[in-house]
Amino acid sequence: MDREAGIEQEIHTTTQEPMSSDVTENMSSPTASTASPTLSAPSSKGGTTDADLPDLEFDLPPRAVLGCVLIPTDRVIDMEFPQLLAHIPGVVYTSQKMEWDTSEITADTYQRLYRSISKAASVYRPLQDYNVMALACTSMAFTLGAELVDSELREAAPEAKGTDMARAQVAAIRALGGWNARVALLTPYVEDLSRRNQAFLEEAGLKVVARRTMGLLLDTEITRVKQSSLLKLAKEMMTTTECDVFCFGCGGLRTFSDGFIDRTERELGVPVVTSNQAMVWRMLRLADIQDNIQGFGTLLSKR
Image (cartoon, rainbow, N blue to C red; front, side, top):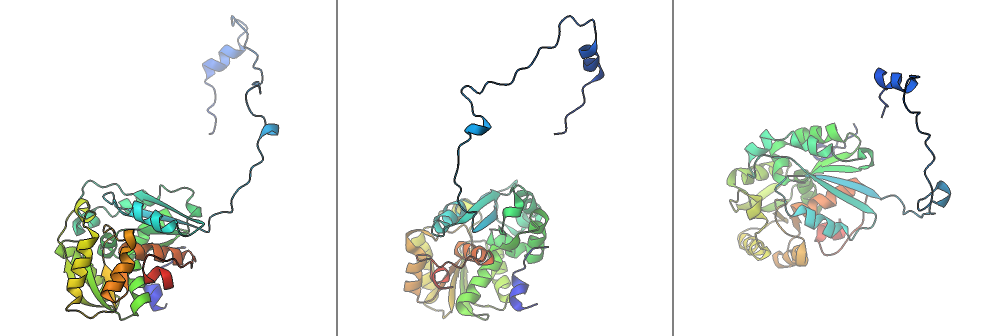
């Protein structure tokens, strides 16, 4: 098994109720007061018969069908993914939220509620149409680990290729900076989750040369961080850091609008990876969609 396979695994691995006896007896009884009515065929007046059915033309089947399982607090992915995928014809994207009893973005939440992944993924129909099924939450993915995530996705959609946002992050950084790329990592998480993100990248052979986090506990806070603040923090980190790739971790950060990724790459002078950009790119490539598009960074325009 090659190194890429270690990070990304492909997952292949009205009947009619009989009448009651009393109803039957009443129908056959010679003492019944009235005869059963005779049913006539419905009139076609104002309706449609087989001969009248319209002659329709259909589009070709989709090039790929992509399914994402989202945490219930997410407010960004359902806006950003369709915004990007609208540039790629023939790709269908759908999402399904997990069922939680909390809004806190913590390791405890993920470890306690991981079974909600397969429950959400199993809602999709028809499952055999899905080329890729993904867990679209970076911190849930690196907290649980690839084996557990894949087990949950495989339980619901065994014929789909499985992935998650944390592994997509790793694959994107490697595609831009190599297998041992130096990474500057900016996250919105509480410190515990930010350290876990760093550890996940380093376990994959990447070198995290700088890390900073914002200490935010709720997605309602993370999704409101302005792009101006993201760029300001990134530029501050780069004044004391040399890296091959700058990474914005977390799918809750808004990075797709107003050419933010392209502008940040120009100002920092290095390629930029964001969790949502990496997730879409990885799903497309797993579905053998090789289209390149402009406006969302080097990753999607050249890789």
